[in-house]
Length: 226
Image 1 (cartoon, helix red, strand yellow):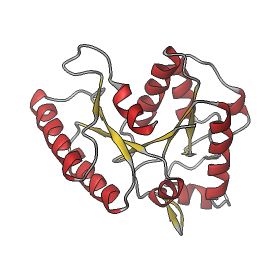
Image 2 (image 1 turned 135 degrees about the horizontal axis):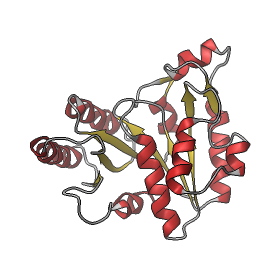
Image 3 (image 1 turned 90 degrees about the vertical axis):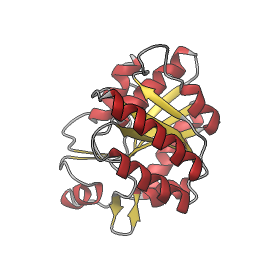
Image 4 (image 1 turned 90 degrees about the horizontal axis):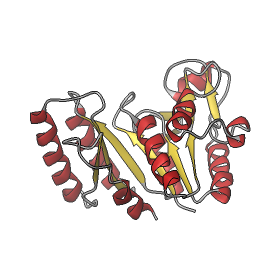
């Protein structure tokens, strides 16, 4: 079954909202879907990003959530996954994450897996998030925004994805924090050109839809992943 990863150009960029809203879109079309968070840090109870997904999906807490399949690792320290794991006396094992994802794939048509922070966040001393994603051979969605620094981070992320030959379904441009029209227009122009120059499909979903009419075109990203 198709699996799609959601990664950001940085932390706090809107991955959880994008993941939850795409899942809701699929549910509204009666497509069986579940979400996953690969690693959650700063976690003192239920993983907050999974809670956000379920709120947006209006699905309630699931059996797979209770079993820990939707968040294989949850650490109390709010930091990089490798450091949060070390402080908890643990080491993140890629096989544990992939095994949980495979169990979800067996039960659902779609699995939407949210990453942690940016592409090169370390999971352990020998494995970055992008290393892990590259080994899974699933496409990803890159979440960006209109805040200052996003152009630099987005263009660098696209270049490294091209260099690693990582499949990319497209971008989500997160406007929930707002942004001047001049920045939005210019960023969308630059990102569209960069996608094409790096050999990726020119797929950009804007959230909320801009200029605030119509619905998010999630199908453009899903078509690349199916």
